Amino acid sequence: MKKQLFILLFSILCICNAYAQKIIPKPNPARLVVDNAALLSPAEAETLERRLVALDDSTSNQIAVVIVKTLNDQPIEDVAVNTFRDWGIGNKKTNNGVLLLIAVDDRKVRIEVGYGLEGAIPDITASDIISNDIKPAFKQKDYYGGIVKATEDISKAASGEYHIQRASKSRGGGAGNIFKFIIIVIIVIVILASRGGRSGGGGGSGLMMLPFLMGGGGNSNWDSGSSGGGDFGGFGGGSSGGGGASGDW
Image 1 (spheres, one colour):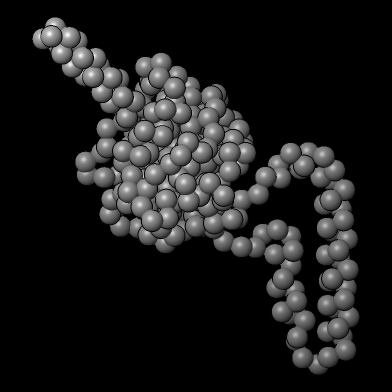
Image 2 (image 1 turned 90 degrees about the vertical axis):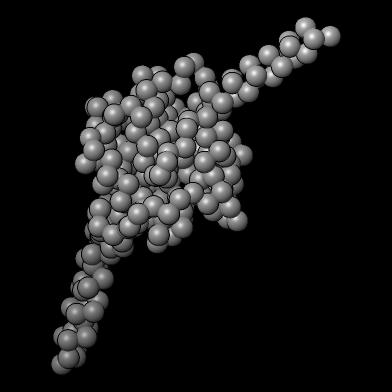
C-alpha cells in the first residue's frame, strides 16, 4: 500500500513539474518586456517597455513581449497559452491581452491572443504579422525592428486599423497608383476652378485634404515614439483560449 501511494505521489509530482516547465516565470516586479535571452540591448528593451506601457495606459490593451533562449522541445503553443493564463495578461473582464513569445535558439515565434481580442486579431491576421513583420526582420538579424513593427501592427489590429492587403499590392499596384493620381489631379483642378470664382480663400481647406488622399494622413499609437507611459501597473488577470498563430524564421 505504501509503495503504491509513493508511486502515485511521484507521478503527480512529475506531472506538476512537467506542467510547470511549460510556464515562463512571471517577472517580479511586473514588466511587459521580458528578455531572458539578452536578445535586445538594455536601451532597446527599456524603449519598448515604455512604448507598451503607454499603449496599455491609453487603450488598456496589454501586449507582453517575452523572449527566451529555448523552449526545450516543448510546443510553443502550450508554453504561450499556459504563460498567458498564469501571468493574467490583459484585463480580467475584457481579456484584451496579447503575448508575443520568441524562442531565439529554436527560431520560433508565437502571437497568443486573449479571448476578448480574437475578433479583432484573428489567426490569419496574427499569421500575416509574423510573415510580414517578424520573419523578414529576424532573417536580417534586426530583432528589435521586427519586434517593434509587430507590436505596432498588433496594436493597430486591436483597434481595427490593421488590414491584410499586402498580397494585392504586388498585383496591379501601378495601375492603382495611376488611377489615384488622376483622381487627385481632377480634385485639384476643381478646387482651383472654384477658387477662381470666389474672392475668399475657401479652396485652401480642400488642398489640406491632399495628404490624406495621398495616404499620408492619420495617426497611430506609436507616433509619439518612446515618450509617455509611466511604470507598468501589473497584469489584470486576462486569459486566452489558444487563439493566434505560430511561425519560425
